[in-house]
Amino acid sequence: MARKDSEHQRKSMSKLFRGKAIFKPLNTGRIDERVACVREWIANIFFYTKNGATIMIDAGYNYERLREKMGWLDIDPASIQHILITHQDTDHVGALERDSELLFRDATVYLSEIENRYLTGEVRRKVFHGFYRLPMVKTDNKRVLLQDGQILNINGIKIECLLVPGHTWGHMVYLIDDEYLFTGDTIWFGADGGCSFLSTLAEDNKLAVRSLEGLEAKLRTRPQSIKVITGHTGWSDDLDFVFAHRTELCKPFAKKYTDPDAPYDGYVEDDDTELRARTELLKKKA
Image (cartoon, rainbow, N blue to C red):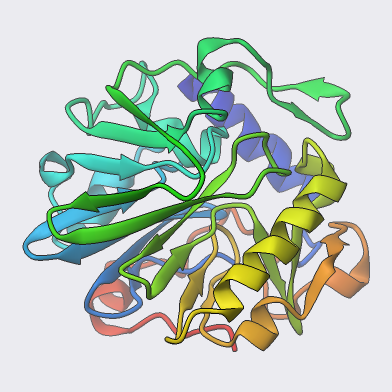
């Protein structure tokens, strides 16, 4: 999906969801000393730093301000050598596309073996209940293909890879150092808790709900607190809140799933500033 396609999505999604109180992205800033966040319109990308190394989680839109906002966090794009991809939608891989600024041209990209089939063209991404096919994403980065349950160790950083299909066929989430779970588009936080991601954008909604229930079962067995960090609606370390509506789908045009604190138009970034990025920690959802 080229830059023109990202721009088209920005305009069409802004028009479609304006005033619906759905998107509630974090602003650019830090959750804590290890996790930093960049806001790209309605989407968030994340950076995890430990032992002097920084891993990127998702690569956002094909977005012109990415270098600028990374600068607010004192992160040099050239330092990024490893990028974990939850799934290949353009708001999660845009900075890797051939006509992007290629800030991460030398980085190795990690994604599930199943998700890679979108990038090879074996399958096409479909949304709106299968009626609309998205343009194909094209990238030249070196890829490492992952299996469900696989554990990576990158510069002393432990990464557990968990397959959660539904939103896309090969969607994967990453539990880092047993404490930080990056969920991409698996979970949607509304005002009173989490549910399965937007129903209109899933390949298979029933599968997405089953995957979310399975993910909860795995996390409930872990002894330590886990920060659950979403791609569009913030973070929480309260698993009761995270999975409050785990059997439900977020229906983006139903008032039940809206958030009164969400901006009128999530594509307007006026409140995302360098001053706030440098001085304010990003608060949890609940």
